[in-house]
Image 1 (tube, rainbow, N blue to C red):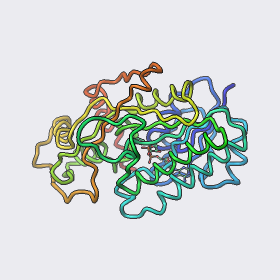
Image 2 (image 1 turned 180 degrees about the horizontal axis):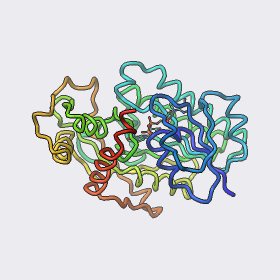
Image 3 (image 1 turned 180 degrees about the vertical axis):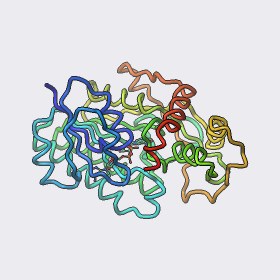
Image 4 (image 1 turned 90 degrees about the vertical axis):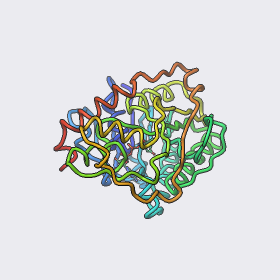
Amino acid sequence: MTRILVTGGAGFIGSHFVRNLHDVYVTVLDKLTYAGNRANLEGVRHEFVHGDICDADLLRSVVPGHDLVVNFAAESHVDRSIEGAAEFMRTNALGTQTLLQACLEAGVPKVVQVSTDEVYGSIDIGSWDEDAPLRPRSPYAASKAAGDLIARAYAITYGLNVSITRCGNNYGPRQYPEKLIPLFLTNLMRGRKVPLYGDGGNVRDWIHVADHCAGIRLVAEKGEPGEVYNIAGTAELTNKELTGRLLQACGRGWDAVEYVEDRKGHDRRYSMDDAKLRALGYRPEIPFEQGLKDTVRWYAEHRDWWTS
Ligand SMILES: NC(=O)c1ccc[n+]([C@@H]2O[C@H](COP(=O)([O-])OP(=O)(O)OC[C@H]3O[C@@H](n4cnc5c(N)ncnc54)[C@H](O)[C@@H]3O)[C@@H](O)[C@H]2O)c1
């Protein structure tokens, strides 16, 4: 049976990925930081290893024997990276290198490094393709760019079969309520206000977590070593437009919005061209309206998940 190791598999996207693996043997390795939650994997058949991707000794015992390693493990919140960048560099850069080294030594046939559009920086008009320069603007984005570059180097220098995916802003169930959509939804459902950065004009391209995971599965199957694949969103919205939809979904008005000082170095807009992945057969399947409706319902029906 195919054996897959998912690092960071107890987080938002990693757990969704694991939930949709069938007829394979799954190992999840996760440090269980504030963002990791074993409840995200409840009812899902897997072997769980509590550990850190920076721990080379542990990886030497866990990694061998797997046919595919997908690395979701990361510090993932930009605001936290602005407060303290060190843990981001440790996990996202050094942790990625430590994991790739373990994969190389174990002869793992395929590795996918999960990354973000934020490595490209900010773009006012047009869209980035995979050859766009990396111009990260936050410590989070810089640490993810470091992970991407070390993955590329392992492919070229050592011949490791690692591909890199870069995705836009994800939404869906089980996202820790520090990111915009779950933070706003849970605040609104508690009767609290929501904090909107700056003028609310920052643009994000939203993608349902299920479409992101489908893109990753395709890259695991067909991605070339050392190559990058963008996974673009399906709905480009300003934060203000998105806030309007969340208010409407929760039956609240604009008096629930508190404009707060803008994030330092706040990227204005992200936009990617995913023609390269589409050429492999990728098509996103979840329309934003439907995905958002389902997500609102999930948070309304799972108060115990976000209040405990
Ligand atoms: N959320 C998004 O919109 C988005 C978009 C594009 C790319 N990504 C990338 O996707 C990946 C997953 O993102 P997410 O939103 O699910 O993040 P998340 O914060 O919900 O989950 C991260 C997981 O990694 C684990 N982890 C953290 N440090 C670790 C370490 N040193 N060793 C082992 N496990 C560790 C955490 O416990 C948690 O379970 C990240 O690499 C992120 O950069 C996220």
